[in-house]
Length: 350
Image (cartoon, rainbow, N blue to C red; front, side, top):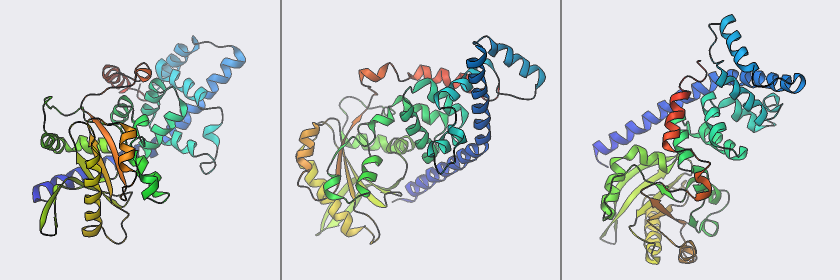
């Protein structure tokens, strides 16, 4: 690895660590705020049931709080409406349960309020919301990153790639690897002509390296591009080599233009064997291979992997974002997200 590449990787890692620390500080400070908003929402829900109050009380409440407690922010009509929805959609006692008994309580209390507003607006399925909350807490996603992950349907893409992990890895490593990888990968931040070459794709991914790392997911540490291996006096070059900090293993990525071909699996098996022998430490897990193609037949791909001895996954990559028809109506557009971000800048401060 050149000194410049090493420095760029170091800078990216440090920036990511700073962002994680900033997000954790926000999560800690926000816990009491979330609890207060839930309590107020619960009060209003109960009053609506007992006294038959409608939405007309919200403007009056917002105005009176502003007049009597002018230093207190976050009680606009819109934000009070979010408090009511928050209390309704997450039950009447969920935030009062011990964390050890109810992990969802820790997620609800730990995610910033602006994240909750975004999730309530854009994700109707509550279990899917909790998945995004967990990813936010684990990866330190800010609101813009969360919005981007919702747009790209991160939930549906995780763990769906063709693979042979059950046959080549023991539990729980096989499940952990499956959840760390996805299908497809969205590279809509690239600008490539229709007749691009594989090396151009690789160059563009390195050029937009920070966005590439975000799309890969948490834990990927860059080792090298066109990583050189010398085997029996012959030279071989891996497209992209990473080390995964959580899986504790090397990950070999090969980029392919066009449709998946069976010979790709054999070559990847060779590379994984070489990395295991030449680079793998005694405490590392087995090297994982990830083949990225423009398209694949999943059944065909799984046949190609059936008798391969190294753990390999096969995913597609997309250069433009495309979503299943049944999701297009429920997921936000870029314009909606930008509008939401603009409006939510004052959420909690109004």
